[in-house]
Length: 282
Image (cartoon, rainbow, N blue to C red):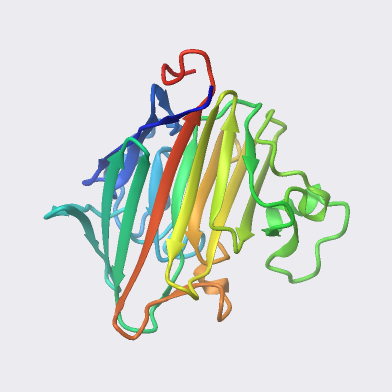
């Protein structure tokens, strides 16, 4: 019998407001990689991949590396978490309940300010895990995928587009086994995806005002990165925007702060389990 699981989270405000736990029933969904450099990261530093879920804004790739919020201390302000960056202020309210978890966001900046945001969630998944999204979703591949495609990479192209689950013939819904590859992709216009791993599912969904581009980024690193010591890490990242690098975003490929100076959006996370003794973990 499939049962809904309560979803809870823990966050670390002094270290970028990062999520250190995302738990459903007895299962921990977030993957971690110990790295002492994460505790001392400062604005302008290269990204430290310690796992968990990082708040990446106003870009993921590019400058600043993985954005400007992950390397700054956050603080509690009433019932919300708050970070202040040079060009914007971001608030987040995380609420857990028996039907799942809701994270509400509010970014304040000058009207017209453009940004990309991603809930950079690295998940602890088995090689049998699958990522479910609507078949035919327009999916962008980036240059690291070039050697895996049958067709030559177009000269000067920042990305190419195919259809989920196998854009340009590259099957991406399978999240293992490890094969020495690392691929980044963006499922454009896709507000919701579901990860299935054994008897357990995790669904991540976005809502925002009309006109805000909603996507899901996938970082499928099957021990293909980084050199010279690659490891396995699977990122499933709900995002505003449709490219990793804000500098590459066209007119409709980034979120834009409206005339009132505030943009709001919501991330919802739900989980189910169909295992024997559901809720006791895997």
